[in-house]
Image (cartoon, rainbow, N blue to C red; front, side, top):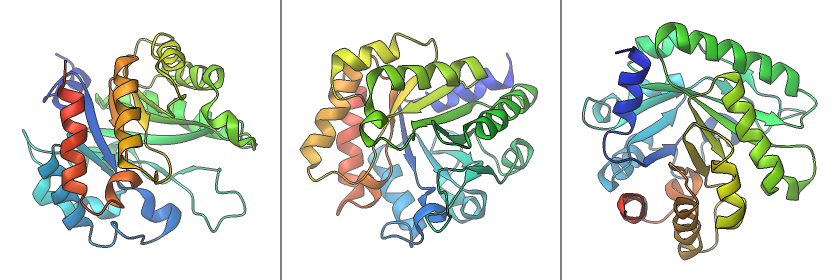
Length: 252
């Protein structure tokens, strides 16, 4: 059995639906609440039932106690930009697949902003990472966003469907996209590709009920899981919220 297949099975070890908590936001927005004490946050989401967490390489060494076979899996994020940049939508590759392997990662991830003036460079980087992942047997999660300067396009069903297909065509094994707003339109997204589709959480939502309803609807539409960061690590009780999400994902 190929290494990539082994690692994908490890990610989906708990159920057919994957629960990822991205904690890679510190480079983008700085030391926000929930990210300062990273060990406390990781412990909370792992206790709540998360399958994997996403961090940059510098923080991976700090949460090693929570990453182990049968426990929480480590996904190392390989691309970055900051809110201080003249163009935050330009993501640059800042690490490698080989380095992630040395850190014990089960998978790697990369962020792509379609519609950005820097789209071509990011797609080129994604293609290179996909080939490296195939070489080393490492699953690749592509975070695909539509960032063309028109806010409503970030959730436009046809554009989200296109974004998911780009990830599959370039060689990603899992794709993360925004939820399109309804089970009917999101079913078009999940039906457009043959790789697992997980939904992003996006900015902090006003209501936990709205967040859980979105996850429920996405699962009904064929989502293979979630990759939700700010709505969990900025919550007053990350462990409780993670447990609620885990329950939804485990419901047949």
